[in-house]
Image 1: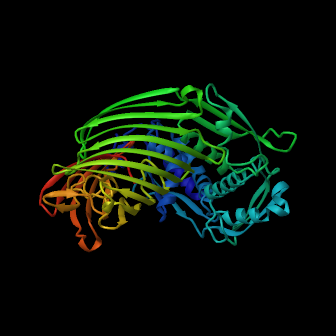
Image 2 (image 1 turned 180 degrees about the horizontal axis):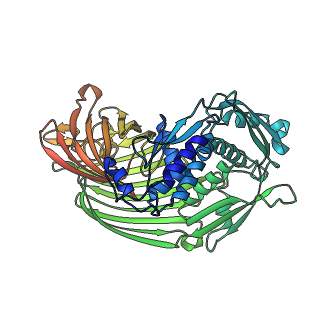
Image 3 (image 1 turned 45 degrees about the vertical axis):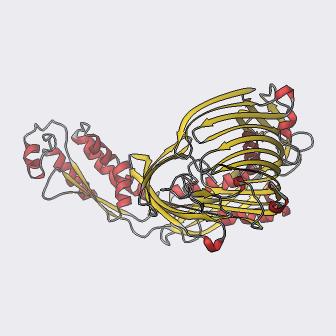
Length: 602
């Protein structure tokens, strides 16, 4: 090595000179000799190592390479100094990747005096021999045995894994974070050591985690309340005073507060440095209340119901009562409606009581349905699941081909929603499902068309990334069970077609054909498969998609005949959800139809 450095110094002192910008390789020597001896040194560097990752490491961090890339003026003496330091610096860099026996040589290219060759022989990579993790303080107690084992099992650098500086640091940070979020917010490393045996190519890891005492959740310290009650926040904690702290409990508490729509901003955090007399740790809750009243006016167009305008008003505490009052008026080409909903602030069991009055006139199908409905129910919302129980009274006035029918139905219903998505707004992985079961009694114009009925509905949506592509699928199956003579209101029956059903067909245009009219069916099944990907990496939010849909509604399963629609579309992953524009062809009619929709639905 000394001889090579000496040769390099001799070459530099004997006439390396500046060449013109970007000279061709075969002209480099001539350009160098044309520059006065006192000019700056110009050189190129060729790093020779088989592993491309190691080559990139040296190119980005080696001083000799960085000065070359910067094209900064460098004297011949400085170049000689960098060349002399390069082997030791390169070996130190390689040690961070687990190569403790690397050999690095610097030499001059015999065919080009201005070209330096840095040759690397990494040698065997060091791997983890054993990883010994000990715990002191709270985590050393007998009741923490399961948590200790869980932490040990979560340790990332297992025996046999390649030992690198970045993975060593990452593994320590990850384990410390797990301990802190798992109940010990003051956990810290008392000692960490990696003992490297360069000859055996192993690294034995020894760590001692001082956990501090287990934190227990204490009083709420609430800031930011102006109009809302303190009890509203206390009811949503989801834990009792003295319960063991975990970060997940506070995260779920914060999400429940956000879902009340009473606050614009919510922050929940433990105060780990403070311990009250009973040994509990206070929880700080900081909120920014939403405006007491809110009005929204919307004008738009939907491919299902046409152009529309809607006005919505929300009062978060009418008459200073712990309830929310929401009213909405909607006018569109095919759908008109009004709604008033009262919902309580969360109760101690995390439920909300609901009451609503709805009026709707639906002209989307061949039946003009005027519906008046009253609902009373209870809603339970967790971070990922919902459960709604309600009683509904529905009065329906239906006009079909000039004939008017009036039906009345009362039912008891139970609905479940499950979400396991990576994002509720823009999902790419996971699934969501809805299940609805109802039992009721329908009364028509006479006693012969009255009787009990049952209603079931199931929806499933799934998302899966496939390399650079993103696949999605949805399915829906529904059925009303009743005697044929029972006059079940049209609103409780099923029609298919439209944006979130079978594209290529008009909204609610697929159902039971009778006398040239399309009526709701008692059974329905639809499904969809879609594949999408970004158009370019520079526009990751703009996707192209291809899809195929199928389904229909019928009076009974023996009459069920699915129809198919397929097409292509564009997706914009906007901040409010995916905006979808689709061109779909109905296989049954051969016609194309344009569809617009925003967001994901169940």
